[in-house]
Image 1 (spheres, helix red, strand yellow):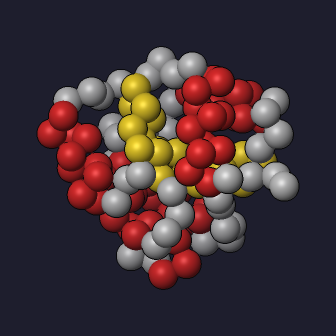
Image 2 (cartoon, rainbow, N blue to C red; image 1 turned 180 degrees about the vertical axis):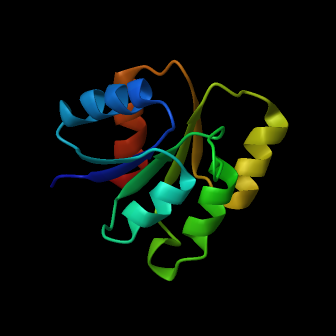
Length: 121
């Protein structure tokens, strides 16, 4: 079974790194450049899990998580926050918004794959 992932990050380099890490592990990867674009891409897909950054233009990760959680079909979709931020209050805010987990950049591709298989598998 191929797991489908949506990765939302304003950094093209980060999107490419995530795509590379997950594609080579057999995942199907969709990407979006910020929260607004993420909501648009989400419209046409049903991912098994979502990865999002926090600091992005137009709509940040918190806004994006909230937007995802208001959609009935994505209410239970696991969301992993992948960010350079490590502050406990931001982690708590992400959890309160509906995030499933938190991974600090730079990420270890193997750990990311393992985390996704855990929450989405």
